[in-house]
Image 1 (cartoon, rainbow, N blue to C red):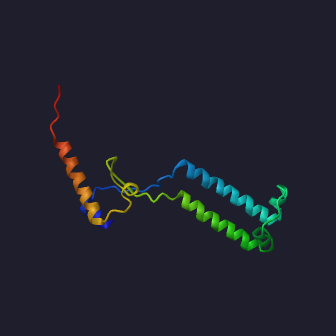
Image 2 (spheres, rainbow, N blue to C red):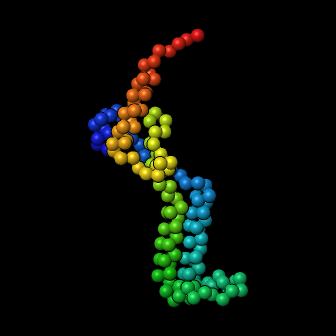
Image 3 (cartoon, rainbow, N blue to C red):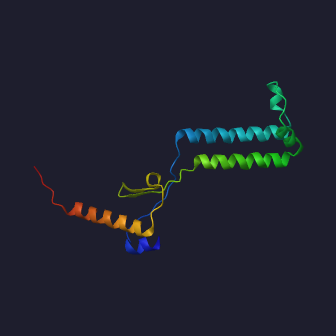
Length: 137
């Protein structure tokens, strides 16, 4: 980062979240609510399987005997899945609103050398474009 600021003192670097697809966002939101429902049922001891006429599975019985561990397990497992759904792995670079690198497309992060070369090329193109004479009709 420091190398970029030294080479381009006027450069502005900003970061923001790259949202996942709406489907993944909705699944993560549903999972978050479902997690709270399951934790609530574990705490109050209601057997949701009895409501639908099914025998309670062994893991539910274990959860009733170990409520703290069961709640923690549901909480952490659900959070892990929610975070995976919300993570895009994006690292997108734009220069003057023009995309110059996409980790989503390339599959990897640029090395510092690649990044400097990309920025050098883009800066040269921008200078060249800005110095071209304009023809009026």
